[in-house]
Image (cartoon, rainbow, N blue to C red; front, side, top):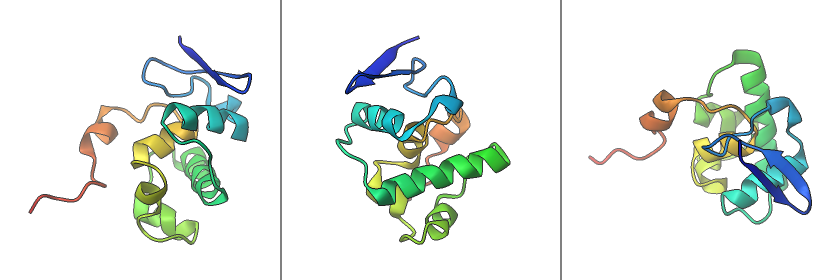
Length: 114
């Protein structure tokens, strides 16, 4: 079980970088997870997305429809890919468990090549 840290905030993650215990998520933990993903600082707009992801997961125990998530936080429909590299990165920084290969492999947020 790897442990990462930033500013003396340790965070336990699995081998893929997902937080081991979602209940340990804090904004400080999010900053550590974001730094690992190459995001130096999280904005309030990004935190709104992360909180919405966590709330959606709390209610449904599933990965949300990304455009609906953006609508719920009153941001453009591409807010997740604009503010994070992709939805799985946002999910990871939100401290949620690995969504599985189905979600990671599907990558429906990428434009189709036709």
